[in-house]
Amino acid sequence: MYWGSPRNSIPVEERLEQTKKTVASLVNAGITEIFLAANSGENWAVAGNAGVTDKLSFVLRITVPHGAFHSPSLPQRVDILDENFLVIKSGTDISCSSELAGFHLYGTDLCLSARTKGYTCYVIDFHLTHFGAGKLDENFEWCLSKIQRRWNPVFLCCYIQTTCALFFLSKYSVLRCIFGSQRSIKWVQSHPRRYPVIVKILKIMGINWPSLATIRTR
View (cartoon, helix red, strand yellow):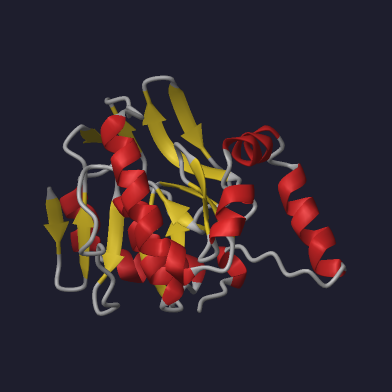
């Protein structure tokens, strides 16, 4: 389902309830002006209510079956957004990749597209209640394989943390075998606070391990 205005389009999952204001009133109020006034984020392309930063930290403004989450200091810049609610700024030429299909990870795809074009993504203070529980089933695995195939050629090396999964992207198969292995993925998931520290140490040593914040494309 899409709500839109001449300036923004908003994909919204049908299993959502708007708890503060209707989506229509958000559009009518002019989300671009509200967002820019709060953040001076003139270069933003995609906004949502749940995402992950380059330090693998979750930023959330959502209620789900297992709890309510309200991160401080919103709006907040993130690398990846969840697709339960997205605002795509018109005129940015940001759209889902034609190679992809299905219900999962199109928020990730949109954010990767935005970042490679020099735009930023933000979690905004827009509270929604999501009644459904996402399932990491065969459909999810199929979508994950598709998005990796689409974006692997673009990145030297990068971990991508979504709100439900962590995976690795690289144009080099040897790096995918090492850092994209289940063992490496589980280590990063088990040590989220150590990950940015390790990246910082590597940079001090002259080894540039890029996140989306320091994106390296071909």
